[in-house]
Image (cartoon, rainbow, N blue to C red; front, side, top):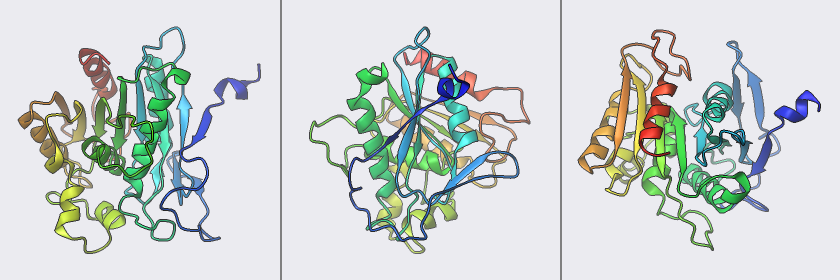
Length: 292
């Protein structure tokens, strides 16, 4: 068997046919993947959203799945160190992973860029739950994970899974069963990451939209159990974002856990070089405790 076919991952388009809410894509709006100076992949100008399937090895697969949402401030996707690299770690513990290449909010390709990401998140969990048997996963063990702005993206599905933005003829439940939010943007009302907010909502969003997209203000007793990782010295996205959401979950008696590094800054992916604590192992232990 050729090496390539061993590593070949299935890439699945989120929408068959036309994408709801999409405009005709301008000719110069072309998806671009570049290798950054540190060797990681960055993807921009996504107009056709997909997910890449990383099936857990059959001999250790435990039926759990996770949708991974890379960060990048809603302007790019940190596709390898917050995506495919993480999927491989999940595979090693028997979890099937789907790396989501979601559309980045843009007036050029979307009728309403504000809700485009939520639409892609709902469509991803819709397809994956619908095809659970095909992927060898359990419909009640599908989580979502996001880094930075991808954490905001994931937190929006965690809190607004019922606000339907897609066609769901089978009435499939779009609620994730658990979430992992890694140095996430959470609030557009406190400790705001202005770049992320501007990219999603525009320069002067109304308070109602800021509130809708502040996940900590939309938690209920039905919100999925959630695990957080953040560094206290994160200058890009203050760690208060994770704390606010963690507190909101506790107040609603939802299972939640948080690990705060003293140092590490922002965007460290799987490896925080300032610490010998491997947060992924902590997440794996938490998932086991939560029976995922």
